[in-house]
Length: 294
Image 1: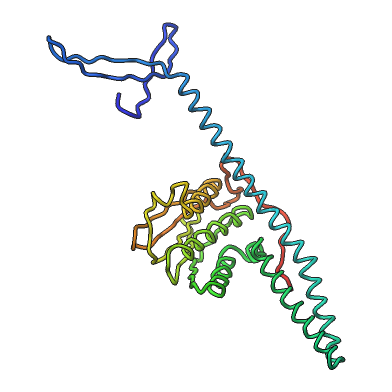
Image 2 (image 1 turned 180 degrees about the vertical axis):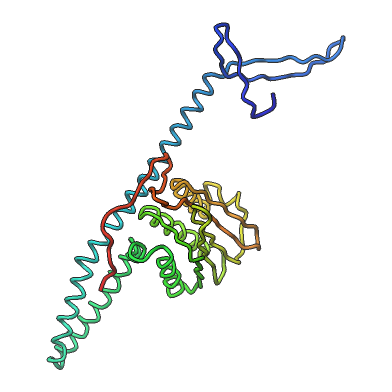
């Protein structure tokens, strides 16, 4: 009757119900005895079951919100590319075509306009990739992570090495987007907290699962403390863990002060079926694939 054991009592009609038994030793003149207190905990168990069901519903709703957000990000990115990105590119071509025919102040004004259009095109392209990188859907996860590594080195100076075992790793669009953002969150944690000049991201297939390891040689941390709700690092890790769990996967973090960090997670591959969600359903991404701005 130790802790964790499920004890049941039997009513007179033969039905079973959950109980808890508390044993207390008592010393008497004629020797020690044990007093047992038996409690009916049916109401407590029902309340716990309702709480767990409510928590599961919240997790499913949270995961559905993430999927909806990713689809909306992709839709907006496609609209930005098809409308604003192409309009800027066309305007730049037209303005540039008449520049050589001008001189003096008019030429200076046109040169300034061309520079503004070039910068606007760069800003639009950056915004599109931050919203939903087209390369993720056009070329795949490995290529998108390689682009992410290049972008982080260019913008923040951190070198991220991306390696892949070469095995086929089919993922539907929803899973791709969640995995990509999970890796980006983990790498950004390295940038913000690890004080490391470099990190590595490895992709490999293990049976019907994709495993990704994000490793850095930085300052490390106490994992239990980092996962406290008040921890800024922990909020990101908790978010990654919940989203990966929504795909049917699991996140594991190994770290210690001055020992670096390895964050690993596995998700099931789309081997003929959709990626499983938190409620056991299958979900496949859809919609149009957006190309990068020209």
